[in-house]
Image (cartoon, rainbow over all chains, first blue to last red; front, side, top):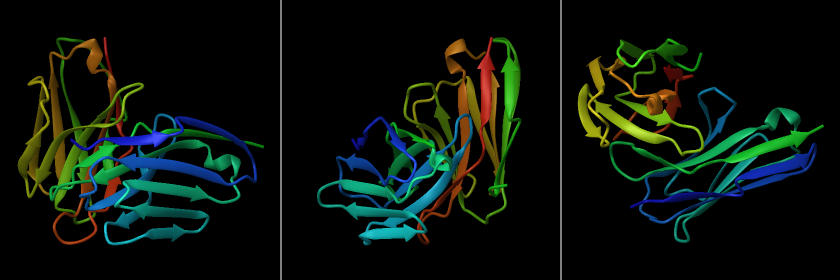
Length: 112
Length: 114
């Protein structure tokens, strides 16, 4: 059974610092991996999608890497801002129906 | 709006009530999902529909009854719920088999059972 783990569970940094969020998964047979952002009490916003054949994806200040063989992904957020405060969720798809298996998330606080 | 719309945003219901959650997508996706998010727990998949057929029922109690009348609409019918069913219920859609499986989520329905 696929298990997804996110470390750390919580992270607090001063504004301007770079953020590094880690995700690991136990079964490397994935279709893709997605990073989401969730603000308190809200739905999920998709940040980056990495196909199983890709090594990384970039969007603005965000960069996500994927190492399937070791079962790891890392989300980097450069020059953090208070608006980046949220919970970041990692999820993998492991079957053709597109079912997502989520990690528990990393709660990020960026202080001004 | 994200392209996936959920109503209502908030719902308070008694344990003997019957209510329904609604989800609508205008993205041309061919699969729709219900997820449950409880406090301090990872998101859990409840149901998967693809081309209006249910392809997954993830051991969900029968007091939750999904319905998918067409590829754009998904409902979750609720009856005789328990207080532990209080949670954020999220609908999502995706395009399966033919590309990236990229997901779009709705904003969720915050359900409180009293």
